[in-house]
Amino acid sequence: MNLYASLLRTGVPAAVGWLVAVALRHGLDLDATAVSGVLIPAVIFAYYGVFRFAEEHVSPRFGWLLGYARPPKYEDTQLSLPRT
Image (tube, rainbow, N blue to C red):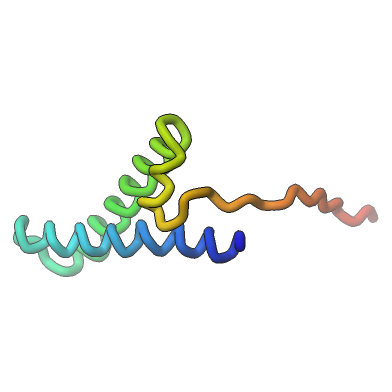
């Protein structure tokens, strides 16, 4: 389930970032290179940051806007380095 949650919580902000950037492209008259190189990653980062912060500090319900209501939980496995 953690793999599913992590993939979903990565894919949803990416899709939203792409949609917002494409919509802004039409309103701002930007070329495709500017949209794909700068605007899409910036929107993805902002979208994820805002809703992850809201999920952590306001209400866990904001997690649904990232595609899954809870962040993935990872097992704490301590791996030791080989000694030489």
